[in-house]
Image 1 (cartoon, rainbow, N blue to C red):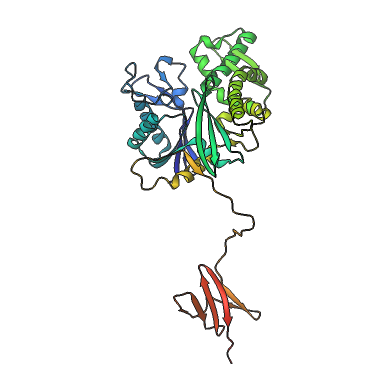
Image 2: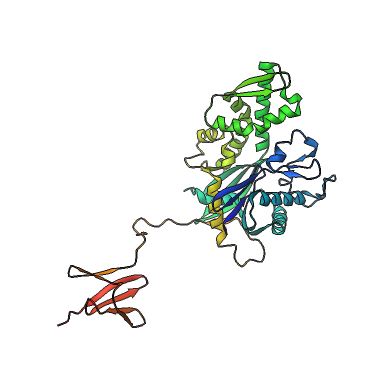
Length: 405
């Protein structure tokens, strides 16, 4: 089992042998004969807003849709089609572990299990993403919080360490905090800059507005690289418009979203006595200003951002012992932390013995005519004469040597 799907509607990330082989955001566009999913659908969502859908994972269920959408009867049908797209995109079919947000209900987990089993994937286990993250970066504290960013919500999962076993205690949803909300805020800031600097409103055209949304990932990279300002150009048929946006302005407009997350963390920490180390997913870490806000509050330490590759490796390891011999797809929401080997224990690899050192002479074991006695526990070598060794597992111990004469 070497493939794992990190299921998050901001992007479904499929890892095979530790490498990201496909990433597809939770968008569907039903405009024309063949529905499209992922990046292609997201890149046209503002051009065809009535035919664009991005809540089918967030609202995963089998309730009938309020109106007919192609051949999709419910959100589960759309999610299933997205899994088919992901398999085609990656070229992968076969055994799969699925890392699932803790915000999924029991009913949603059941639906997910059902559609995954009908897809080209063969689900072996589902694991809680926050639990996996906590095994990657364990802390000394009794409680840890894991913050993740989904397309339509932010989640804070509280995890408790009970005698070395990590258990999920609760999942909080942050109202107003989401990847979609962050993108909307950033686009609005940029749009206001165009109006102020160029007397030009990109949101008057779906095409120009779509361009702004498509550039959000580039802006995030620039901001996280400490770029002080960002220049954006829009080329219309009549003119080229250029606006410059200060990073500080974007951070200021996102401050309310950051504050909502920090307030939830502060309330949790207060209920637990004031101390609460926080882990961030790679998505949450991209929110401008969130890391610095949590660091200023004393919640975020070094190495507190868990990458997708780390989640993939730890998720496979966590699922390995739970997936075998199950009639249904198991769901893992607790984990035993592995204890580090004590410092005084030698964990070096010991190679098999090749020689016996006797009176300053090294006698090769590979060239000896051996014969065994006492059920292969005691071995006597003919050369050097009278050499007796005892085998204990892979260790050879010289017991005695009788010299001829």
